[in-house]
Image 1 (cartoon, rainbow, N blue to C red):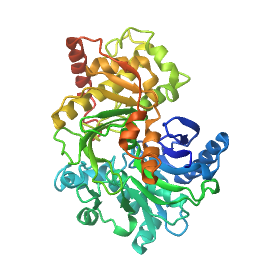
Image 2 (cartoon, rainbow, N blue to C red):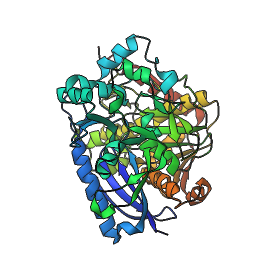
Image 3 (cartoon, one colour):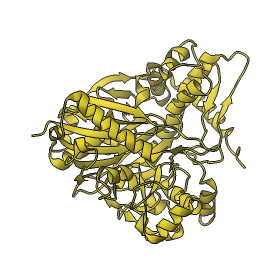
Image 4 (spheres, helix red, strand yellow):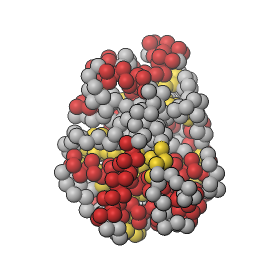
Amino acid sequence: MKKYIGAIDQGTTSTRFIIFDASGRIISSHQQEHRQIYPKPGWVEHDAEEIWRNTRLVIEEAIRKAGLHSKDLAAIGITNQRETTVVWDRSSGKPFCHAIVWQDTRTADLCAALSAQGGQDRFRQKTGLPISTYFSGPKIMWILQNVPAARKAADRGEALFGTIDAFLLWQLTGGAVHTTDVTNASRTLLMDLQGLKWDPEILEELALPQSLLPEIKPSSHIFAAAVKPEIIAGVPIAGIMGDQQSALVGQTCFSPGQAKNTYGTGCFMLLNTGETPKQSRHGLVTTVGYQWEDKPPIYALEGSVAIAGALVQWLRDNLGLIRTSDEIEALAASVPDSGGIYFVPAFSGLYAPHWRSDARGVIAGLTRYIDKGHLARAVLEATAFQTREILDAMIHDAEMELRELRVNGGMVKNELLMQFQTDVLGVPVVRPQITETTALGAAYAAGLAVGYWQDTTELQRHWRVDKTWRARMDAATRDSRYAQWRKAVSRTLDWVE
C-alpha cells in the first residue's frame, strides 16, 4: 500500500501542498503566497497563471522536503477558494483576464438588473443561493461582456470557465479534463441543487453557453491521473471540494446537526443538514456539503462572512498598527474591552445573513478615550459578532440547537478571540488537534476514492480535541453587547447609492 495522500490547498492568499499519513498527521508541507490585485475600488483579482506556477512549486518543494517520490502517494485531493472565476482558452490554457475573486463587487449592477426581474431570491429555489456579487455566474457574465476575446472564444466554443479547482485540474492533466465537483458547482448560481446539473433556464437567462462549463462529478471520485508537474505524474487526482465544504469533512461533521466554522480571510460556518436540501428563511445559503462516489449528496446550510482575518491584515498593511498578524492578540489584550466601539468590516458589502452590497464598513462609538488597543480588540470582536449573526440564523432555519462549534483556520490559535467567541455564542467552541482541516478534507475525499481509507467511521477515529472553550460571559451582558453590534450594523446600510 502506498504510504501517503497529498492535498493541494489553494486559498485566497496562498497555495499549499500538504502530505498526510494514514492517521491524518502532516508529513510535509510547503506554502507560497500570491499577489492580491486591486485595480479599482471594490475590484479584487488574482493572476491564475501565477497560482498555477505556485501550485507546481509547492508540490515539488513539499515532496522534496519529505524525500518522497510519486510512487509514495496514493492520491491527491484539491481544495480551493470558491466562487473565484477563471475563463481561459481551450487551446492554450491561458486565461483571457485575471481571475475575479469571490470578494469582488464589480458585478453589483448586473446583480441588481437580475434581481429587478423577480427579486434577489428568484433562483434560490433551484440553486439555494441569492443573486449576489459573491457567486460565479455574474462574474462569468461580466467577463464575457467586457473582455472581447473571451466573448468571441465563447461563441466559438473555445472558451472554458472554471472555479480555481477546475482550472488547476485542467493544468494538472495537461488540458485533458474539464471537470469540477458538486460543492464548487453549487457556488456558481448555475447548478440545480436537486439534479446536480447545470440549469438550462438560468444559463439562458444569464446568456452563458453550456460549452463554457465543466462536467460535474462527486467530490470523492477519480478524476484523472496527473501529468504535470512531472514529480507527481501518474498519481490520481481523486478528490475535489470547495474549501469550506472540505473543512466540514476534515472536521468529520458527517451527522446532521454538526457544524464547523473556519476563520480565514473570511469566516464560514456550515451545518450538516443531511440528504435533503433545506431552504433558508433567514439569509443563509443552501449548498452541497459533499458527495461520495455512488452515494447521494449531503447538503449544508452555510453562512459566509466576507472579512475576518482580512481585517487583521488591513490593520497590519493599511494602518501599520501591527507588524505581523500574530501581534494583534497582545495588542487587543492590553485593554480590558473594546471601549464601547464596534467595527463592522463591510468592505465588500455584507454577506450572510444580510446580503447587502450597498453596505460599507464603519467604526461606531468612537470617543477620545479609544486607543490602538481598543481598535485591535474591536477587530477581533467583529469576527465573533458576525459569527453570532450566522449562528442565530442557522438555529432558526435548521430548527435545532447547536451543542458545540468545531473551529479551524489561521485565527483559531488566538486565545482571546476563541474565548470571546464562546462568550457571545453561549455554546462550547472546540479546536481539534489537527487544525489543517481544509486540506485534510480534500485528502480524505481523495483517499476514500482510491481505498486508502475505508469509510467515514475510520476518519472519525482520527479526530481528537485539542482544546474546548466555554462561555464566561453572563447572558445579560452577551445580549446587550450583541444588541449594540446589530445597531452598528444598521449604520453601514445604504452607503452606496
